[in-house]
Length: 423
Image 1 (cartoon, rainbow, N blue to C red):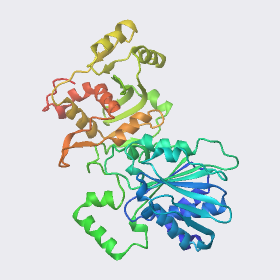
Image 2 (cartoon, helix red, strand yellow):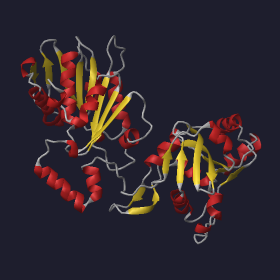
Image 3 (cartoon, helix red, strand yellow):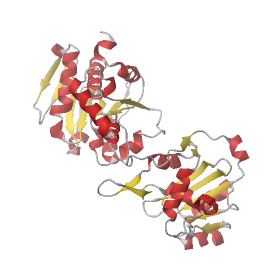
C-alpha cells in the first residue's frame, strides 16, 4: 500500500513523525481539513503493527458514536482490513473495536464520567495510545491533563506512549488551548501539525463554494472557521513582536536598562522584568525575568541581589507602598519606586508599546514574557466590538513593562497631547 493511497499529501509529515518518539501529537486546523480521518488511519495501522490498546475520548460521551467511532470504521474500510476487525456495543454505550489477530482494543469513553477513564484497564496489552478529539470542548486545561496523566502513569518496556490531541482552534486567543499550542514555546516532545480545507482534495464543490463566499463577505470568520486561525478580537495587539535569542555579547552592550516589578497576590504571580530600551531605533529588548506565584518580598529581594540589580532603578506597581518600603528599608533595594498612575495611563502605555518599532523577547530567557505578549488580546463588549484596552488577565509582564518604561512614555513628544498625569 502506497502512502498516497490513504494520506493527503499535507499529512505525510504527520505519518513520518508518528514513527518517531514524540509523546504528544497536536493536530489542529479549520473545518474540512481532514485531520480526523488521517488520525483514524494512523491509529488503525498502529494497532495492527504494535501490540498496544488505545482509548478514544471526547468531552461528551454520547458524541463518540457519530464522530470518532464512525471515523475509525471508515478508516478500517478504507484500508481494506475489515476482516481483521470486530465491532461490539452500541453508539451510545459500550463501544469497542478489536483487532482479531492479537486481541488488542480501541476503547471509547466520554470525560463526562472521569471515573470511567481512570478505572479503565486492559488485562492483555497496555493502553499506550490516546486520541482526544475536539479538545477545544474541554473548558479547562486540567481536565485534559488529568486524562493524559491517567494513561501515561506507568512505565512501559520497549514501547512509548503516544497522545493525539485534535481540535479546531477557538477564536479567543486567551483560550487555554491556544495559549498552550499556538505558542512558539513548544516542548521538544510535542509534534504540531496544522491543516485546512484547501489541501483536502476530497472536499465537495458546495463546501468550497461556501468557504469562498465567507472569505469574500467575512474575512475574519473565514480565517478562524475555515483556516483554523485563533484570530481573537480580529486585531493583533502587538504586531511588532520578535522572538529571538539575545546573546550575552548583546547584553554587555545594553546601556539603557529598565526594570519593572508587578506584585503578585493569592494565585496571581509576581513578575520582575529587565529590559534595554534603544531610544534611537525605538526597540525594546526583554532579556531577564522572575515569575512566581506566592512569592514573598524576601524571595524577590534575594533574587534581585543575586542578579546584582539592587542598585538599579526599579519601577514597581504602586498599589503596594508597604512592599516597596519593605524592599527599600529592610532588604537594601534602595532605588525602587512606585509607578505613578492616572486616568488613561493603561491605554496610553499599551499604545506606546504597540507603536514601538519592535519588542524583542528572548523566549528562552523570558518564557513568561513571551507567552503573555504573544497571547494577549483586546477586550470586547457584549456585541463583540473591540475596546481600546487589553484584556485584564494574564498580563502581569505587560503591566511591569509599562511600569519599567513609564518615564520614557511621559517624555515622548508623540504623547505630549495625551498629557499623562502619571502611571
